Image (cartoon, rainbow, N blue to C red; front, side, top):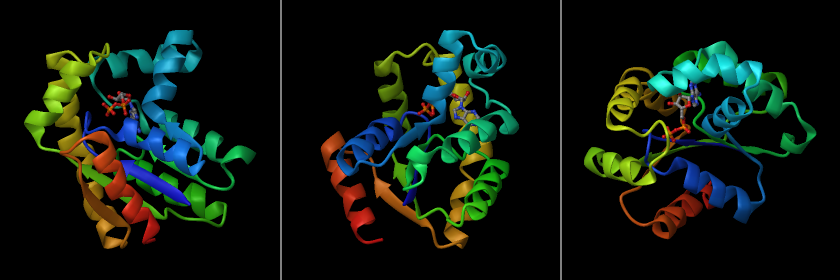
Length: 184
Ligand code: ADP
């Protein structure tokens, strides 16, 4: 099963993806977490990614797609994966389709976690991550609107989209996601 947990920055994708991964024993890949780790370790990838992440901009498609391709080719990910924070652009969605097709599989479902925008800003300011200052949050939300939001249509057209109301507490949202998965 290849699940994509999708949504604006701060909707709680990471929290839900982690819970799903633990409770369903499906490996999880967060491109944001992978990039933050590379930045902390000052690897070549981290040095390149740093300026983009810290400006709230998207890291170039080739770089992020490379991380995903490499991960999905590991044995550990052969039985399935929960993707969190990827794809974020149409080019990434197309690259993901091509990677999976070459492996004889496809995206099972895109779970769109939908949260009101004032709640999103509140959650991100509470979280206090380094890229969660008001200015960078504003930039990330704009990038989401312009580059990522249009992907909802991409997956809707392919019959892969399921939207879940993310305005309630973690367990309640999780329950809704479980229901979606159980119906796949
Ligand atoms: P959030 O859950 O708040 O959206 P993430 O941890 O997913 O945060 O991402 C943090 C940052 O990492 C993004 O603002 C972006 O700079 C970079 N990033 C993560 N995933 C991608 C991606 N798929 N393509 C490009 N940049 C990405």
